[in-house]
Length: 95
Image (cartoon, rainbow, N blue to C red):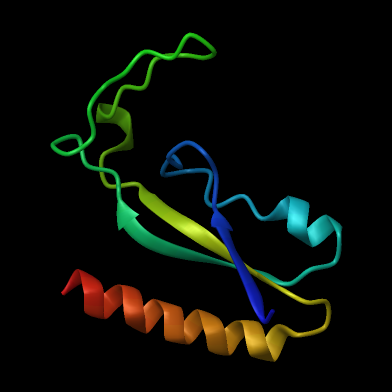
């Protein structure tokens, strides 16, 4: 396996916090964050979660939603190549 694809986080990022990659960094794995889309108050619907606060899409308008690409230890070159190919695929799909 060259890379693992995982959600960046399970909630939308705010405009100020960025992606969360610290868990993978703590276990010495190279990781890249790849934005895939953006939150949209027109597409995202508010919802209530009994386990946490309700989701209101308005404050997250335009914030990135993405994935993490994680690779083997000391394999940064491979991860960068996979990230480049993945970014091109996302761009061609979005166009």
